[in-house]
Image (cartoon, rainbow, N blue to C red; front, side, top):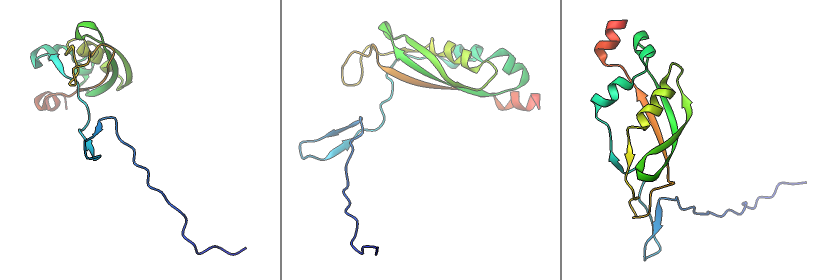
Length: 133
């Protein structure tokens, strides 16, 4: 059996991302990743006490990822999907409770039931890092 010298047929298929729309000319317009619209966010002063105390005592940093759903009145219902050991997941859940999502999305639809992912990163100040070295 001899190999054919003919090129293999190929077709390009365009897939539109969820954040894209098609304008009047048929052009795809990508608006970028959707971001949550916060009605209220905590201040750094309110977040500081939420750093896991045992991790702080040991000079450890970490992070956690949460999968959340916007509830009525903008509260978030979250579950841990990934975390650094040492209490960072529990701390991230406490942080999520301090945020309130806007009642509506950017397009005016009701935000209730909308998924929101949060990544909570806990980092020590430089002087805290040096003091524990």
